[in-house]
Length: 154
Image (cartoon, rainbow, N blue to C red):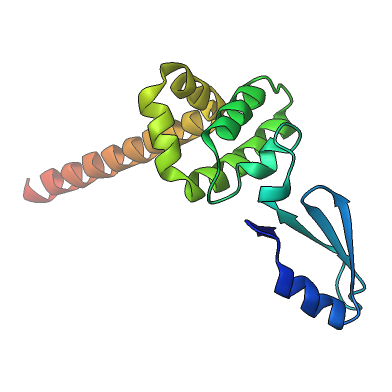
């Protein structure tokens, strides 16, 4: 669960229910003691350390430009396929929460635009392939329909 600010009332209520709240790292809390559920993490994005938890900080609805820029730069250096799918998931959520910030980065900084394009390269290629396949199928159906009409009118 992600929160912008420390959830004082929530933590108080959870403690009253007998649950244990452990601050494992700055901004990352583990909730233990659920009988029917596994442990839960609550991430307070304002409390995260800037340089070590950028992938979490950019998930905030109020992500800071410095964090987004650094995350994008770090992400472009990743090489493993699994890493790319993780970055994609983080990017999707971050862009959805901070669309205006990403639009400004894209417009104002050609290097950032190129880095974003590189990060999304596989997804863009898949979308192009899918659209090309759809267009080819539509053209084939239209050609078939015209051929049928021509045969029927003859």
